[in-house]
Image 1 (cartoon, rainbow, N blue to C red):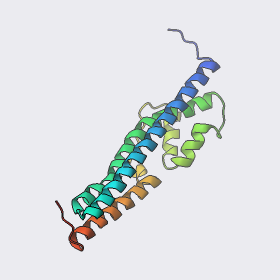
Image 2 (image 1 turned 120 degrees about the vertical axis):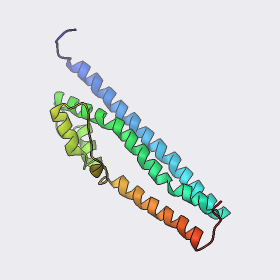
Image 3 (image 1 turned 120 degrees about the horizontal axis):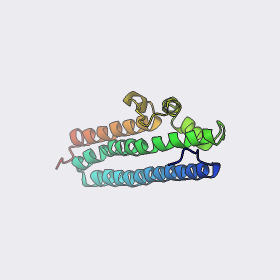
Image 4 (image 1 turned 90 degrees about the horizontal axis):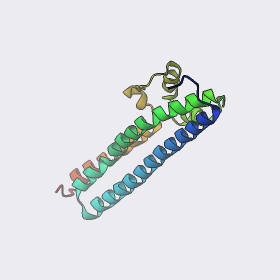
Length: 164
């Protein structure tokens, strides 16, 4: 094993692979969202058409499943983002580089934590739950869950839909 630093071409190749991996994870998130939103819509429409409140109860938990899936996929994407941002610094791409801009714009509450992890060269990135609670998708999915659960309660108590 030699102590030489990797050349610019090797860094560019690693940078390209990092962006490809991040793009792949982002694509997985979008596919997961599409499938689960479609399933949610089907469950809600079927529950209303069949007057079955149990189906509406199942549908109300789909936003929670989406949130758990997004957190799981982001836990894989964030270390890649840190590596890509580190490579952007090594390649002197500046602050307007791709990964830094994306993370700063899309994951604003998490950006300072990723910068600290990048500077300290920490392999394990620990993002507190409180920080995840400030990310916009969490609010949207929480409100969606509350509204769908309210739909279940109203259908069961007011309109007397069957539970099973």
